[in-house]
Length: 191
Image (cartoon, rainbow, N blue to C red; front, side, top):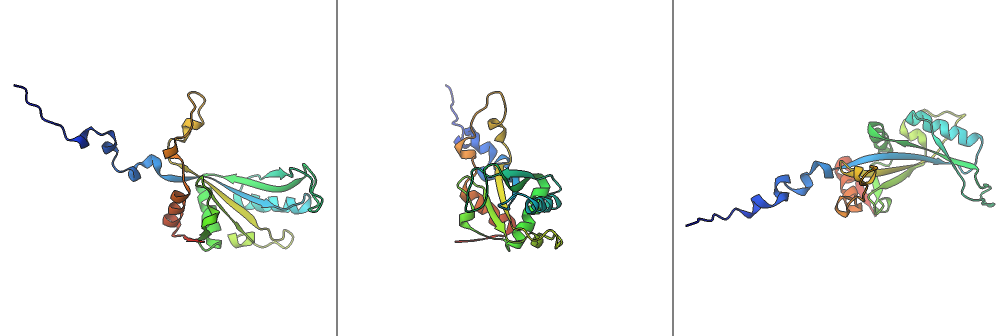
C-alpha cells in the first residue's frame, strides 16, 4: 500500500538550479589585460622617445624587448633593445582600448581574433589617441593586444595546490570574443 509519486525530472537535474548557461555570471567575458607595444627596430634615441610615449599614455614604466637574433638587412644585433611594451589591467585597460577602437572606428577584421579568443590591432599614429603632438618626440604607431578571460574559474590554473587545467567548456573561443566585441562596442566585423 505504498503510493509512489514520481518527481518531475526538471527538479532533479543540477543544471536547472543555475538557469540558462548564458546567465552564469562566472562565464561572462572580461578583459584580462591590454598590451601596448611600439616596435622601433633600433635602440637609442628613437626607442627612448617611444618609451616616453607609452609612459605618457599608460602612466606606467615600459619594459624593453630585445632582438632574438642578428639580422644584417634590418641593421639589428642579437640582444639589442629594439621595442618597448607595457601591460595594463583593469579600468585603465578598458579606457585605453576604447580610445584605440575609436581610432579604428570600431571596425576589426575577423583575422584580428585568435583561436584562443584574444584579439589585436594596430594604429598608425599615437596622436590619434588624444596625446598632443610634440615635434621633438615624433610620431609612433603601436600594436594593441587584448587578452580575454572568464569572470571566474581562472584560478584553478594559477593556484599552487591542486593546480589543474581550465576545462574545455570554460576556455574563451574566437566566436564568443567576436560576439562580445560586437555587443559591447557595437563593433563591425569585416573580412
